[in-house]
Image (cartoon, rainbow, N blue to C red; front, side):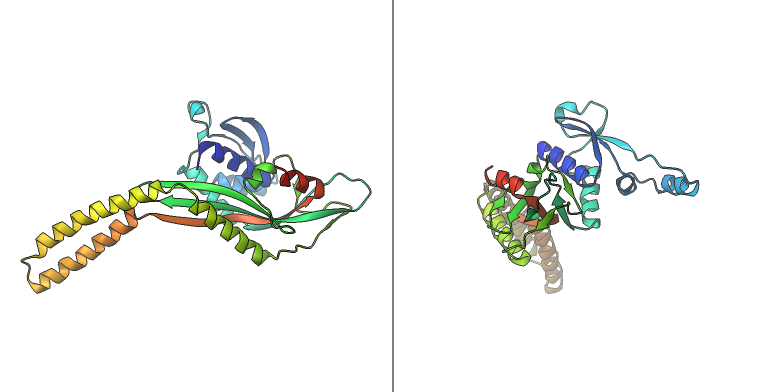
Length: 276
């Protein structure tokens, strides 16, 4: 997960949770949390319990997150993949409702406006070998014509969304059903992963083979003159070490859905997305 992707991911996360972006620069984000987000992220339950007891309005925190390496010395919390705060946000996404329905808030024209359904999934792909790399994908599937768009949430930055449908708006029923839509995105992800550079996997497998050869040689020499009972113990130890070696070095790819939902968008926005 690149630092630029982390910045975009954070902005999308906070905006979708109704937090205000107080200030934004490349690699730096200052966010005014809502009470719900403060309770979720800031770990100060006694503050909110006290505030409620005395009947006062609480003050959610303002946090500054630094994702740009050239800004690490500035005031704020340095965020990178592996940082506790980022994993806390991933966990928050999983703990929240992982599925939501939102509607674009169209300009009121006095005429009924159709809203087009999109299936949106935010996906984490983890590549594990000698080293680990994570990638976040945001995919949108047009549930009428089947088009799939990459970096979908990035295109939503200027679109006003709400959990309530606007006046004079109505939804179009999807032609592609949700289950079929998920299968289409699964096939898209499979193709996407297969097209990625595989040097990391080849290097991981080569390292595994080299270490396995050393392990095999060591146990072969060690077991040559062992008695049967002792040999069986050492063979079990060998299998355990080989299993740990496989877990540590053999290349693996894990795909995890972070969250998703149905976005109902106007014809104007849909047409803009399809021409990107």
